[in-house]
Amino acid sequence: MEGMLGQVPSWMEDLAEPASEHSWGLFRDLNLGEDTELSGREKALIGVGVAAAINCPYCIYFHTEEARLSGVTDEELREAVNLAADTKYFSTVLHGNETDLDGFKAETDEIVEYITKQQAPADD
Image 1 (cartoon, helix red, strand yellow):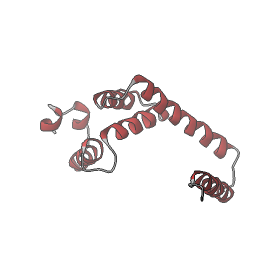
Image 2 (spheres, rainbow, N blue to C red; image 1 turned 30 degrees about the horizontal axis):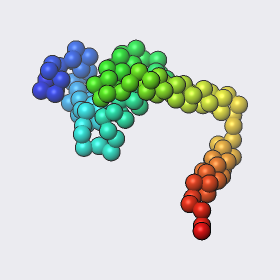
Image 3 (tube, rainbow, N blue to C red; image 1 turned 90 degrees about the horizontal axis):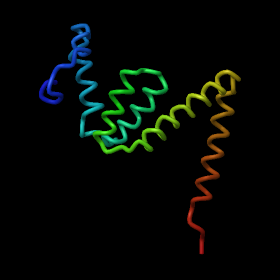
């Protein structure tokens, strides 16, 4: 941990002993690992969006700084936060109105099919 971060952050020291190694491994491999499907830039933007959605000032600060290290612009940060807010907003609408999940999935599948057809190259 110290080799990657230059220190052992105090918040990592607050983890209960049975979870400390496991928690560091998850953090290291998912957030800092290079052998993942997502780039560090993509992971940082996701982190910023999730942090904003859950209203965590610690995570917002960490993932914003992580994103800046990856070259993310202020405009991209704002867009990530707005996308998270959009998702949270519509989730509230769907849950609050008890929208039928099976019907929602069917409509979404129809939308995806329609868009896929629209994007298909035209036959000559």
